[in-house]
Structure formats: C-alpha cells, structure tokens
Image 1 (tube, one colour):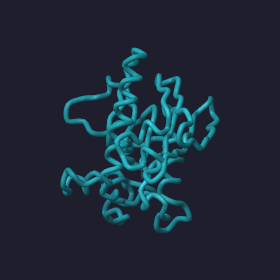
Image 2 (cartoon, rainbow, N blue to C red; image 1 turned 120 degrees about the vertical axis):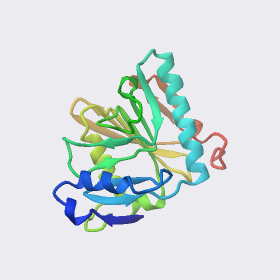
Image 3 (cartoon, rainbow, N blue to C red; image 1 turned 90 degrees about the vertical axis):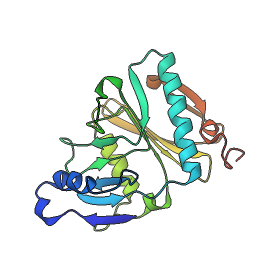
Image 4 (cartoon, one colour; image 1 turned 120 degrees about the horizontal axis):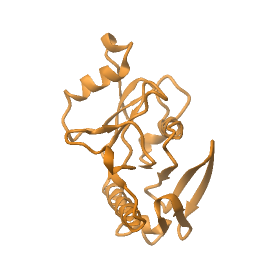
Length: 204
C-alpha cells in the first residue's frame, strides 16, 4: 500500500489536493483519498479482475431483469462529501443510478452498493490510525445515505462479508461456498461460489 501525504498547500482542502495530484498520474493508476491520505491501490491480480467482471455482469443482469434504472460499473470514484470529508473511494464495483452518468465524468457522490475484492494491502493499518484500510472504507460506505449494501469479497477462498442497511441499522453476515447471496433491492440471487466462476478458487 503506497501512501502519500496530501500536498501541504492543500491541507485545508484535501480533496482539491487529491484531484490536483490525480491529474498528474497515468490513467492506469488507481488512487484513493482515505482519512485525508492519498493511497495507491495495489495492482489487481487476475483472479481479482475475473471476480470484478463476474460480479458486474451478475448485478447488471439482475438489475435489467427487475427493470431498474441502476447500473453496476467498475472503478467509479465516490466522493463522500458532505457526509465525510477527506475521503474519495474507488470501489471495484458499485451500483449507481444510470442517470448520473455524463460525458467525461468519473466521480459520483454516492452509490447504492459498493463491492471490494480484498487484497493483502486492504488488511494493513493506515498510517497514523489503528484501523485497517478496509475497515475505514466500509464505515465510509455505510455513512452514505444512499448505500444499501457493502460486499467485501475474498480472493483466495469462496467467502465474503455482506453488510446490509435496514433503516438506520446495518447488519453483517459472513457467507461462503454454496450460501446464497440474496439482494432483493438489486434483484440478485446467486450462490457465493458463482462469483468465482472461471477461477482456480471455483472448486473450493
């Protein structure tokens, strides 16, 4: 996990410093703003990429069947302001309203679902904090009023953690293997194992 300090001239506005920095970086790099720190995401493994493609497809098929105006996309930037300052995340997959998609726009101010395929760097503590990067990000997603579900998906085993909002309360469940991943608000009902199709993890 590569972490950079927000440029001193922009410390009163970490978001401005973040976007100024992003403009200097190659498009293929993936950076996030977490607790005011500029953090580079690890390059995804092949399994990571396959899971992303599969989850995005399953969600979009389910959303289309249900007639929803929502769409699942990969790697959108989510600006958490005004609910949390100093945080802009790039989930592996997110469900947003298709109406928010505009030419040349790569950032939105919320999502209905956020999914992260976990890498070893996600379990490391952020510098200056006692929390891991993924714990901070999950709390950030849960602070978004629109967000209804957060998926934290393992790469090396057929397992995930599902957080679902019910009113003002979030409930968390651990699902594995043949357990069903059921998200009525998104029209999705599949086995956890389905997310790992065409990967070495598929057979458990």
